Length: 140
Image 1: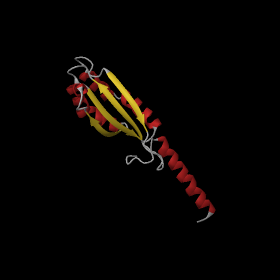
Image 2: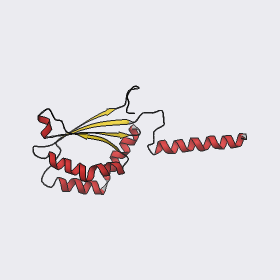
Image 3: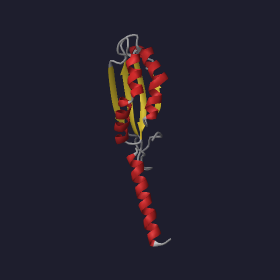
């Protein structure tokens, strides 16, 4: 390989890595960025929240670069009647910001939200915790 070929290959690799990072693709040595979200619903509205996630929200999340990891309902407390806990993953913290901005601006999401809240809000409290896996975590 000539020096100019090596330089061209290096420049191409650098450009490609820059484009990938700009589009929210994480470098191989960087762990994913996770967000644990807990939604509390008004009394009697948890089934409506589950329906909105099942039928719409998860798909819209995926379309905007969010990885749906899992969804849970507490079982051993009064919160089982009004709480949804879920985990999302993103390539980077910046990708998380971009994904949520695009999600909130999405016309389909705005319609789905309005329709699901026609009889009142279905979420009264949102808690969000940002997580990065430890070096020994099996999920990275």
